[in-house]
Image (cartoon, rainbow, N blue to C red; front, side, top):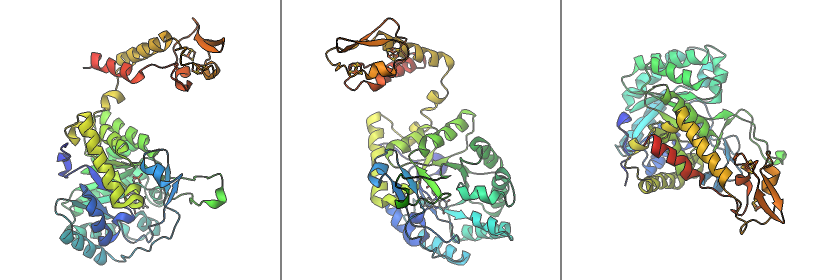
Length: 410
Ligand SMILES: Cc1cc2nc3c(=O)[nH]c(=O)nc-3n(C[C@H](O)[C@H](O)[C@H](O)COP(=O)(O)O)c2cc1C
Ligand code: SF4
Ligand code: SF4
């Protein structure tokens, strides 16, 4: 089995069970620890709600990695059982004495609603950081990712100032690592990462969850509340871009990126983009221990099959693709274009459906006697290959594209 240890953050594996109902209070953290992730983030206290969940089209689609959305605005909203910092520290102590010692406990400090409420929230956050450090947390996490932060910023600082000022402030209040969870909406994620690093963050977690308004066509029957933390599989490529862009600019701070991980392949992508760790949010709370553990096991099985010996080897492995040189890009275009152009229709397989003709904008293919046939006007754009239902038009695109890397970058 692959070695899943994360050296940069001394974690047994790259999975961070992110702040959510699955990590609200000691009872839920301890229940979730059966997953055996590298770290669990104890959810912020004092903002009241947590619980209900809305998944579309359904959880089966979400857990299998198909296009799906997740919003946490429907279903009974559970009251926060923790009302004071003292109680929150007690929860930390309970967790530390009951949870396996090799699982890290990150504790979320502060909540944007404190800023919205106004008052002396900065002093309050510093007090939290100090007391949570004494209570035995392994790291502190700052929560700058949710759409709410975008609301809060209007009340005091702009987003980057908020990230910078709070990171510096919490760093001074603790000797523990400070993990800064960042938004990828309402800001430029690269700037946010740079600002957090400059302010002393020990790791950053660009996280894709947005304000969203998902409209089911039977709109009265469903109820995603606009403005709630909206996520889903579509978050995954966006967060991968934020990570890969930062890595490509030479930013080397450890990352725990998150967003849209419901199956092993989405976790693999976040690591391949260059993040050392990967957050699990909606999957942990809407899928629970079983679904989360399965996703982790599936990743390890896939790594074995694909020949990855460690999580470290997987981390950043796709950056060559992100930073592809113009020579490699041109060669790939040339080879695949040539393959499309030269590939004739397999008349045995052609059923004359004419879909290829419908999508050809160059008169490159026509129907003759109920069968498609290429003309000398074909430029090799590839549209027709995407729509042919029978395999009459087919090229092994993956192999052709990969061969260029093997030959030119090998
Ligand atoms: C129901 C729910 C409640 C959440 N509450 C919090 C929270 O209180 N604080 C926080 O930092 N993040 C919160 N998050 C965000 C998660 O910690 C995590 O960053 C995010 O869900 C990752 O994206 P994913 O759900 O697509 O995996 C919540 C997420 C969900 C699904
Ligand atoms: S590859 Fe493009 S140009 Fe050639 S036949 Fe197909 S759609 Fe037309
Ligand atoms: S799409 Fe495929 S099956 Fe249909 S006409 Fe074209 S080549 Fe034949």
